[in-house]
Image 1 (cartoon, one colour):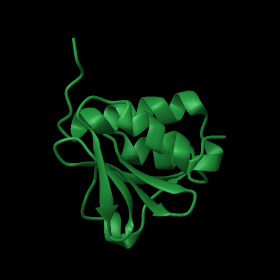
Image 2: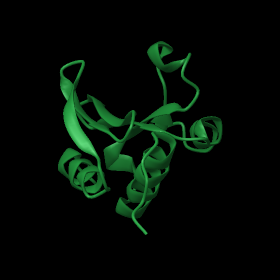
Image 3: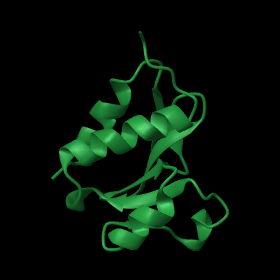
Image 4: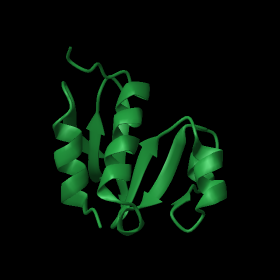
Length: 103
């Protein structure tokens, strides 16, 4: 079960990612926001599969009315994803947020 510290470690391991507060919570930025602690144990990420994720695992993936106008944002319960799934989601979010992997 990943923790907020695991999310931080994975985000900061990506090239060029920085951490700064967003709405009083830890957030990580590539060119734009890539991940943010929404509330304790809940992480916001960007994905191109929001509807599919929430449709297949609504107990894990969801969004609030605040996120409705941003179709790439999805919230996830950290305690309900595997470390590998979290890493995959953060890689996708990094790419969408304009991050570049080193060759």
